[in-house]
Image (cartoon, rainbow, N blue to C red; front, side):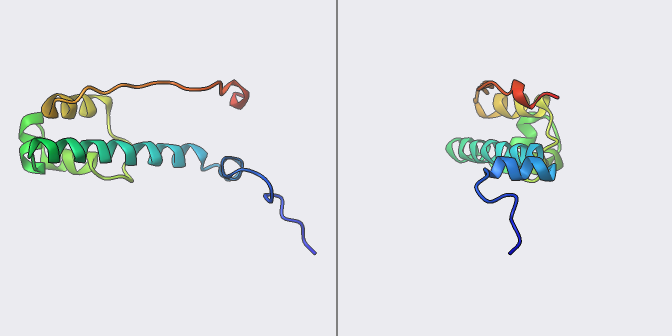
Length: 102
């Protein structure tokens, strides 16, 4: 019977061994950001075109902001969206990940 090297290990261990941990974490964080932006848009009664106008940008930029798979959104875009929607972003580092540093 073949042994499975990942039995009993965590999902993070599996993703790290596959080299996909950082991308998975980035996509998870982006899904949270997209949800928060969508909630703020609903609360403010703002659609994509109106948000783009308030941000002084294109609708394409707003579409990228709201695309959960696009993890390349800039901090500047997030700040503009926050200002346009009356949202203040807070970034917090959590935990000691020094063991990951090679």
